[in-house]
Image 1 (tube, rainbow, N blue to C red):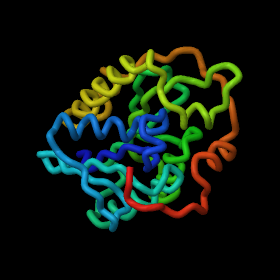
Image 2 (image 1 turned 90 degrees about the vertical axis):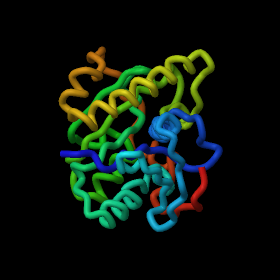
Image 3 (image 1 turned 135 degrees about the vertical axis):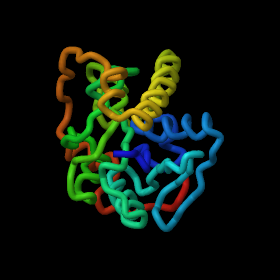
Length: 217
């Protein structure tokens, strides 16, 4: 099914710019710059939107990560798109920095943004692209890790990942998720240890009862 909407997940606000949790935003910024399009604030959808030359929309929800599904549901309802028409790009601590993995559907896997999408869209049958941000270093906490910024010696790997992810998304749009998966999914490595329970991360990420704080970021 054709991809009509590409969603990058992240948290709005300057304090979150450049953090690991915002690689979804970073990918869409990379794509917009390469395609020569500009994001505009759309309060109706609580999002920043940009339109690619072929009409595909890029979307950065501005509701904070835990409420991303609210924004996406509003946009899908307006355009009457199915969840199979979207592609969601987001961070994954279970993948080493620079690694990519497409999935056509699946559980939230501990990610609050994906959990919100599943709750608001009524199912998990939407394609997604996971981008590796690396696991927590020994002695560190998961919340501090995902809300922390990349180290200077990680910058080159990050930029290479964003460029490769852009190429991967382009292939998925033209020839499908299955083919893009075969070409760009990084081979599995040993499992990453589980560090913290999801509820702890969710509270630090953004409280469930916190309302959106404006269209910035």
